[in-house]
Length: 106
Image (cartoon, helix red, strand yellow):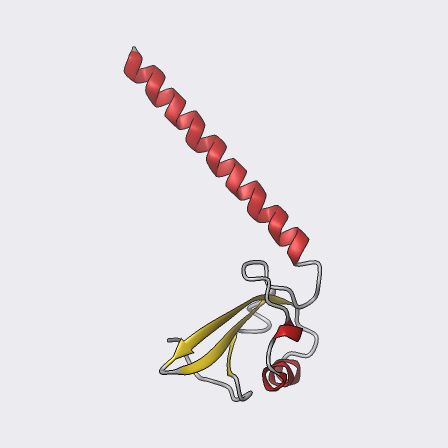
């Protein structure tokens, strides 16, 4: 009997925790993605990127809504990974600080 009560409480706690996390993620996306070039995770905006990277993005996908921007270091080189809201229409880009496109994943 105690085990059943304990399992029930754990299950309710997990369900509540998962629902709360999902609700928070959705509200974060809604609040932070109101700008066309806002990153929900890191808060990086297009205007925060180096000029060369901004120009490369707008040249390749001028009207695309940016969903996420990640800054990575690959072989000592800073690379920005840009993910768009419509990945089928605009696949993610990898752009070095100098504005050159980097091919492939890590």
